[in-house]
Length: 131
Image (cartoon, rainbow, N blue to C red; front, side, top):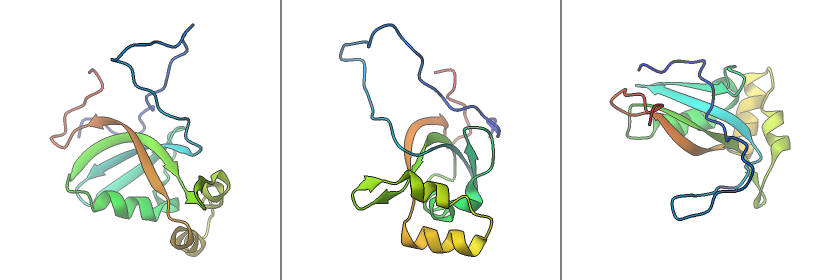
């Protein structure tokens, strides 16, 4: 895979006014942790916006990504934890715990998910950053 961590996330740019037209799409602001996921075979690496590893804190997300049929990819998105019909930033922060047993317990109680924004590297290993 030509794309390797650390890789900066794709970020929105400020504009004077919001563009309009059929070619534009909009998405909500997610209350989560920005994350880039790298998968190569059975290995998954989750990287924070600041370039730090996140996989040990989100074993549930790693497990979900390993179950996908594509064996290789790089995706950019947001880690979120839904609780009672809303996203809980507090539950996300609790995951950043030094004890693996505590992280596993939290993951079982409130599984995290990844909202994917962009495919940065496709299953063939090709970088899509220039598109």
